[in-house]
Length: 417
Image (tube, rainbow, N blue to C red):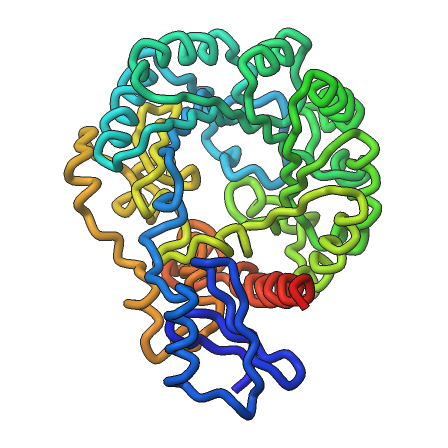
């Protein structure tokens, strides 16, 4: 039977045993292949409280909802693969009025979702270009969201000054820096407007933030050549004090479509195998590797992301309210799925997103896939960029999820025997 789904739980074949993993209890039940009696196993699983029901999305397992404030499409870099793109570019900056509306909307969302925490993260373009808007948002949140526990995050390219570093450290931001590891990749893929290198600046930013008590999350966009130097990349970042690295393969969208000659997606299976090696190597450095492929390993869901599960709200520099960072304008093919017209939270909350994994998995390769509720159909925006169909899972999500999830289960089992 190899790997399959049993009572909604993933089962993988390992030598002479089947390993049944419960996301709900974090436990593994090992069963001899010759003794795989369905009724007996169900009874055991129930007695050990290992069976459950997936929730709508990963965010339904948490105590918080998320607000993403995209301050601008302006940027001080010209990354070769940026999803914003260059065609008909006009600089835009969010208004304070729309920030105010967003804070009120996320308060309403938190109430409806019965969450007591709100995570506000700033995005762009490059959000650090407008520190006064960050300060305004924090000040306004203290009054608008006074009944909630509020924390802050930012995704940045790391090219900013010392005053920004002080602002982030003072407010205890969760800082994600999008950079590409080794200088030879960073300086090819993430350049400034004059096509000059940025690695030295970003290196100093990481070191300064780490000294300031912030555990920086490094988000790598993986192109094909990078997969052969994962260990060297880990060594480089480890020497800068980094403890968390987020690996994501490149999505060919936005500006990347105009740079296909220099940007190549890795083979999905080879990428996953190299990432498995990187995970093992990083353990020896006390570095955590994260990836969307297995980010939901303990939160089985019918839908992949919090955007379609209504736990995330984003306001763009255009004043458009969406639940997906990849869908920021009404001309996007997925606009009707994510964008909230007239800020009608009730209508948005009640609208059923038609990518429930069980609805789409019937009579397909996904129907009995052991990783079905971890993959959960993948990212609709990424699917669309890869396949022109938001409900057809991108191989760069599907294949790494299977390989990495299998490793997750076997590693867990080996720790218990």
